[in-house]
Image 1 (cartoon, rainbow, N blue to C red):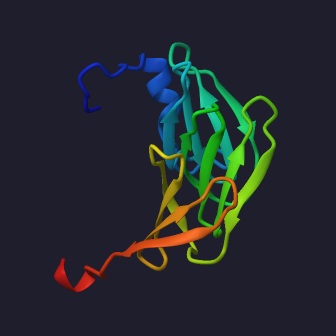
Image 2: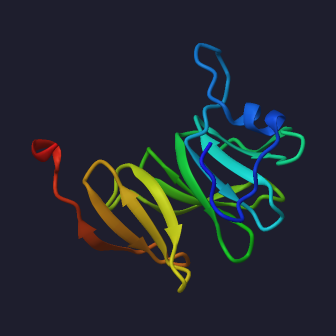
Image 3: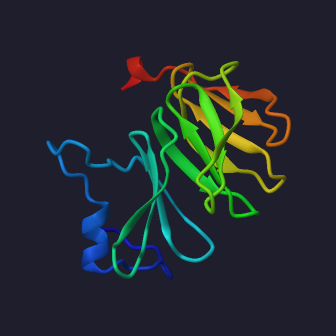
Length: 155
């Protein structure tokens, strides 16, 4: 495990909860992680979003939105903003687990990376079409930020 100055070092039990266990049916596979304001670890992957207690490693499913959530971040209100490989960016209220679509289709197919700008706009790394898309969190409108060239021939 690499360390970031000032970063929380997880106890062994919590680290164990984050590991991918291959070959076990029903085992959630974390693809994206974030930390909420209370210090809990949030993970997204394979139809689930869950919370991991950083002290005990206990996991609690926050939401089961279906699809293929692959990344998430926490907005200023504490809601989770989640990118999905099935062309959707959605918000989850962590208190209720209810998910609400913010934006879908349009400029992106696979919403893989999700971050928030200081303005509150959502920025998504779109994998299928190699582009960065900005989303207005209230209207869901999409704006193309840039395209990323296919580097396959250069690798």
